[in-house]
Length: 90
Ligand SMILES: [Zn+2]
Figure 1 (tube, rainbow, N blue to C red):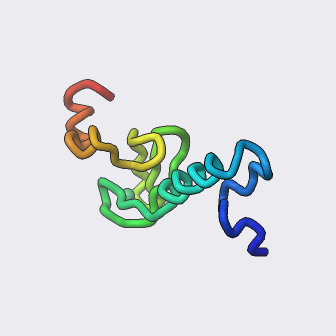
Figure 2: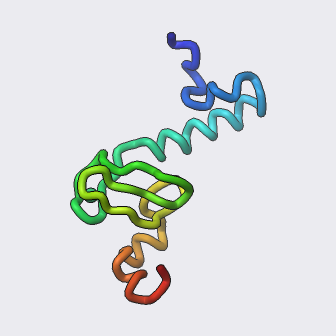
């Protein structure tokens, strides 16, 4: 192993798309898979990205809408998911 030292998870793209783009993909994917804290039970490292913008906590079963690559975005910091629901945005 150790075959994808530089591009990491972006190694699945092989030699395609150029090295700069693959390094950028790796940066985003590492941020996505890093341990994030669940907004309900506050347990870090149990959040899983179900699809783009949908996050699921494997501990308390909480599924919520967040950022595409990270659970909390700038908008998400301004409004908690519960507040967005009250405002009828979800
Ligand atoms: Zn949770």
